[in-house]
Length: 241
Image (cartoon, rainbow, N blue to C red; front, side):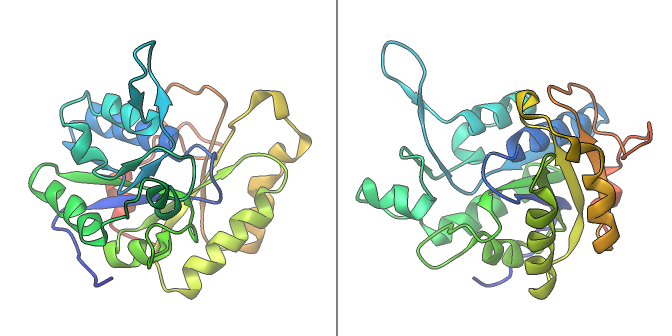
């Protein structure tokens, strides 16, 4: 995919795996930016895994609804995520189950639409950085074409050192800019001792900053790790590690 730099600043949110809280963190950032007066857009190029809303059997995609709520539902869901598939599988696999495909041109066009609608754009990936996004593209390929600084979201618990460092290494070897990493506590019932040491261990092995540790059900602004300072997302998007 050719590079298509947007006219507005932004961040691409990627995960070390699926279910690490990319949408949760994306929404938190969007809400903070909007509260600070920044006209913010959110974009998820593809989403798979629908749920059933009510007894009518109406399907919905939770990630898309949460992103829409984060920006006060000022934009239609088709702009937030133009390609949605039902099966909880990687997008190209889910699309094939519907005799469809991920439109690679629309991946690009969907992002470009936002540059005339917002002053800052949050782009959320799917799965991990090497998850297939289409028949010919990985999430990392789309990230390279978008060329936004990348914010990595990782689980806070055991195993995250390996997953985080692997993700960082892949991104660095591909020459992709990294804004930092956030450790997200996704499951209070699976708490383990590693949560108190993982940030320092990750930081020991990489120059990529661990920006924040996000406690389970945190509802306020994301704060710098071990401080009370709010993270300046606009400033962060202008540089990389």
